[in-house]
Length: 380
Image 1: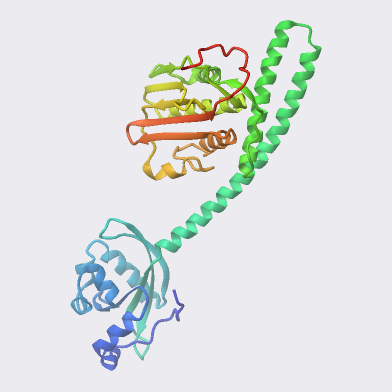
Image 2 (image 1 turned 30 degrees about the vertical axis):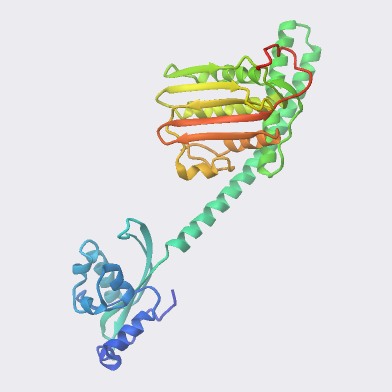
């Protein structure tokens, strides 16, 4: 708002006579926002058209009335602020209040109150100037949140980078121990630990690339989609509570894709974890694989009977750092989408509030030699 002398405005009771009622209304209407002129008894002397329009009346009808007639719920609070201006003799500026519009919207109103003095210096009333600052304030809040998220994203990237260095050291030492140990059981345990550490290192590398806006790195080879989905279910088994009814329907068709089986394993485990977390009170978890009609692709899906995805969130669920979970970080589905796109595939989802969600991952089918263990029927 425009600044003014905090000691008060040099208006007096002759102002109305000098300008005339029409002139006073024109003067008040020229001021942006909502304008009230009140005396020391909380009586309204004049308002601009903007104020009257919010109440469905006219400035003339409001002149000479008490504030509590128009604002019965908040008039006392407003008058307490008025009394503070009368007692101090100085203006109050930047009062921020939330008000509900007739349409049920919550608006942010910024109010300034200036004492009105007579030529002798006696305070005879005050001028109230209020403006709706909802949009600028929300924009400011949005910018603050964006800055915080950017800082968080940068910190996360650095943390992932450091973690990746630690994992590289773990993998190196496991490989050394695997080469030097003589016990077969120890070799198997070390191999499993090395595999898990390698997967973790790959995951952190991809998260770092995601944070930098770079493409996900994948190791290309043929792999059995059903085998990957089965591994994901096994890994997630500890999360499947007795409240959940888990169904697995894997097609007998040969589903061989080309790409990084470990990355797709992360996709499957992410989707299963999300489905489980969407049903804290139990429900039905359905994991399926299928061969689309074109037979040029392979697919698997994860379906739950949870609360579903809110309509407002659907366009943004794959955006990094966006989440609808109270304790979420917004990386899971962003990583899923990035990995699948790196495989030249797509992620589809269908969701309705109260009816659950279904995610379906579609990948190009591998044409060529089949990986070991893929001995199912061709799926005609």
